[in-house]
Length: 305
Length: 219
Image (cartoon, rainbow over all chains, first blue to last red; front, side, top):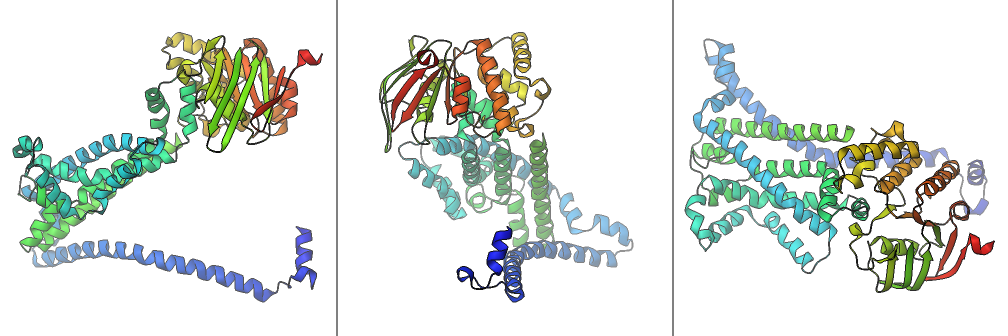
């Protein structure tokens, strides 16, 4: 350390120039500028997200205040006549919330069940057609959502799917299937990445000590992939909640039948009820954030154990 | 006994040719050689994690060349322990017995026996994240010995440890080996470890075993 300092500070030694206060100042300034640029670019996007949510919330607050001001009992009006309370009291929206919770959970569970084996095989094994399979699994991600819905609709024109089309298309199962078709692709990507990060030697040790492949997977790999499974579930759930295009085409937007929260926003906007649309949007934000917090807390608790 | 006869392994550009050696029952063979000389590859072939191109591998007189690794009955201690991050130490020690369907009472007895032998009785309820390097290797050794294998393979198990811990572990390994009489194949760079543990030295160079000597031969 001492050597390097004296080397640097010796004039003319090895072509090194003296380090002046100005050089130090330039480096410090350059480093600060670097981080300022990074923070400004990243922060702009974060600000956009926060502002969008705040705008929704402000819109609801503003409408509540207007209603309260015109009411004889402002406090009571604020509680019962604000757009969110009104939306929550509406039986159609109550049905939409129930169906959303049920279909998103079913879709996320199915996505994880499918994503775990596919992610594992893609991560651990080389087989003919692996790259093709990898590309096929990305199709639902890159395909326009309406095309996914249309493709599902067309698929159910053909046998054997046509046999069950009457019970699926424009019915509740179509909601789950449309959500699952897109959400599963995201879950697969998450699970593959999870298995990529798990050291395969642990599994090899388990096999060498007498485990079958299934035992090694169940006892060693799956517990290690626990957080990845939770992340895949969360992502699939959130993705299902926000799915709209495939639902509209494949399940329709029939009130009290195939209406989920995303279609409620669309239907309320169509009839000009912007207050209800914004209120339902905020309910969706709350639901998504709640699921995110639950899984993060679960993940953190798991990491501590 | 571990016996390799004219083993050839081809993996990309890497090639091992006509590797033959024998570690007698109850003995400890030490496989030495430079990095990339193929020590770990040979060990993985014996364990069954890698297939050989030709030749045969016999464990205690049984040809296991094409046998599934799970059926070879070999205890394996990898380089950094490769402990299962979500399992507690006692679950590691019970792992190989649980997958064999051993009754719970016997598992508990064996876990207690091993934890005393390896000096890890205080660590039984810890996870790998809370273990030091030396402790992790003790647990890895216990996990490998739990089902009383006839053969134990260790892949540079002490390479990441400081010299004092390494010396303690060497002595522990020697004690364990004498008590269990398990046939051992030990891969290492360290001549000191080879001196303490090995009674049968194998030196690997350029994909071939170039030197074999045993302590009894030297005497």
